[in-house]
Image (cartoon, rainbow, N blue to C red; front, side):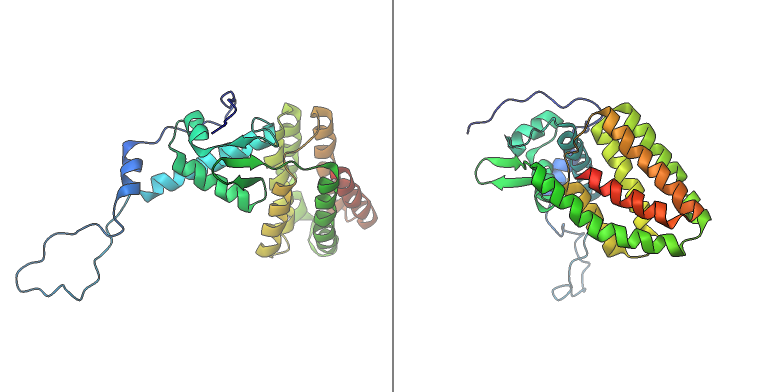
Length: 255
């Protein structure tokens, strides 16, 4: 198998090594044998009672791997067009191939990578046209909702989102695309959550992830984050014309 060598990811995208208990948990039977039945008991028709298993630890490792891979995708440590195998990535993160493969399957469902049979996973390359199309779809979904919310949500609820807007500005100031992507997603998620439609939030978040890896230098990230704060102040003031203009411009810039 031709596998290009890549340097280990840097920054915070590190995952603790799996413990031996996590490896043994994966090999344990679904229903471990319980204590022997007492004499006189009829157990042949009873379903065995599942015993507690350390599956939570494995799920935790898988979740950490997924977060680490997302960070690596946004930061560019996993390069678009390159193919990565689960065993090689497992070595980089200090875990077995299984949680890596499961995390990559999740990323494949999200459209961030694609499966390459007998080789691994290729990071999806998104051209300018595809990114523009994703921005247009996000605008079609989010803009009408936000304008509707602008007419009905009281100012104090918008004001409660100020910390998220400020956090996006701080994240942009670091120049780290992965850090900013998470802060940007959190702000948009909180805004859409005011509509009370969980399906809407999930679809919008999926589109946001598909638009990654996020492009742009620190100055561009700062400009994008500043729009969050400006938009929020217009919503607090109830300036609908300004809200309409800012929202349209925000998504146009994203494309």
